[in-house]
Image (cartoon, rainbow, N blue to C red; front, side, top):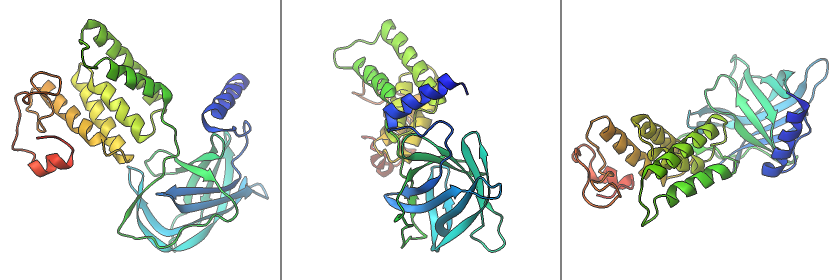
Length: 301
């Protein structure tokens, strides 16, 4: 990493998320991982001794499961404090393991990397999810009590909506304002917006539920089946991030994909006039999805 890039990263970090950590600084301190406003884990990470990069503890419920949608379930007490067994520094991050909460279990491995301001990214090694944002906390921070093993807890996403994606979405909607006529110019602009949105996705800047919902609308206005299928996938991610309003675009993008590949739509979101008004476009399999499910998905009958 060049010095100029590090300086630029620090400036951008300060602009979007508060003061940046010093370049190359290891993320020592006390950190919390929160779900629905409650502390699920507390990481106390201090400089190590005797050749180890870190010492300290990870305090957490004795057991939990993590879903690909970044939700925690089967959370079981008691709360246990697990000592850090070994730690190394890797490119400005701490890689460390802690004792297993289960008798005879293998150590649990993490990577902790400083991010902007009072945030860091925590990776559960071997768990197929994106890193989780953890927040710097005071000495009084503790793991919450009274978890329900039958409940699922959604992780708190401490991200800001991407401003460039917000602008692309606003332009996409403005191009479809009442009285506007979609033509070749709009189609070219749509293609440019999709290319820009894809770059943001590839750069990891599409992270919040609203980000995913906005990106789904942009790709819904594509011109290929793959665009509509990507829009559907983005909409599902938006729902998983708590954006229930994205259920409609998830349904509409699937309908558009089905029609594009010569199959009947199943929700009736695509109309013959193409402007959301009038009768559903044919072919339409009205019987496949029961009316009650359509209402639950926010799809008007």
